[in-house]
Image 1 (tube, rainbow, N blue to C red):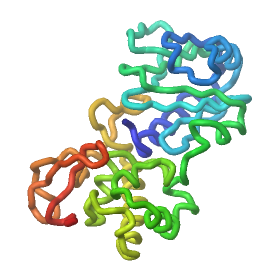
Image 2 (cartoon, rainbow, N blue to C red; image 1 turned 120 degrees about the horizontal axis):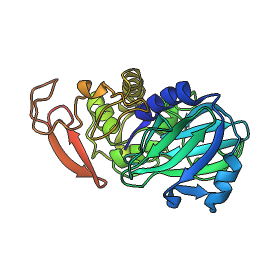
Image 3 (cartoon, rainbow, N blue to C red; image 1 turned 135 degrees about the vertical axis):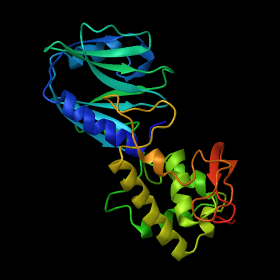
Length: 275
C-alpha cells in the first residue's frame, strides 16, 4: 500500500498534470469504488463542468479539489492515476475515467479494486469519514515528541501496531515503521508504554527524518508502486530493514530477521533492536 511519501509524490505529479483542467464527463466501470454519494449518477452529475483547482493530501489520502468539491481518494493496495490522451486504449483494470474538455483523460486504474472515492462539498471533507478520525500529520506542529509520548504511554499495545494506527498520527505504514524503528534501535514488539523519554525523543526524530528523506526520494518502489507519471521512487535503495530478511545489517552485519507483529510482516535486526 502506498504510504505518505508515495502519496505525496503522486499528489505533486498529479497537481502538475491536472490543475486547471475542466471535467466534461466521467465514466465509472466499477461502482463500488464510489463511496459517497451512494448513487454513481450523482457523483458524475456533480463533477460535470467542474474545474480542478488543486490536489492535496491528508495522511495517505489524496484530495482533488475542484471549484465546488473535494474528492477524497484512497489508493489502497494498487490504485494508480495516470493522464492519457482519449485515443489511447485502456485495459480492464481502469475503473474510473475523468474526461477533460481538452481531450485528455485522468484514469484511475486498480487491479484489486480496493480503492475508494468520497465526494464532499469543499469544507466538509474533514468533517466526514474517512478523514474525520485521522491523527495529526507527522510534519505538522501538532506532532511533537510530547504528543507522541502521551499517545504511547496510554496504550499497552505492541509498538508497531500503535505506530500504524492512523488515529494516533497519519502516514506511517509497514515499510516506514520498520525503517523508523530500526533507525531508533527499538524492537517492534516492545510495548508502546515501555519506552522511556529518551527513546521516544529518538523515535519521534527518526519518524520525521525517515519520512522526509523518503518524500525527497519520491517514495519507495515496492511491488507495483509508481507515481502518476509512471516514474519509480528511489528510497528503496536506502532501506535498512524492510524487505531485507537474511541480509546483513548495514550497521552491525547481523542477518536481519522477519517476524509477524500485529498481523504485519516485520523486519528487524536482532542485535541492534533488542527487546
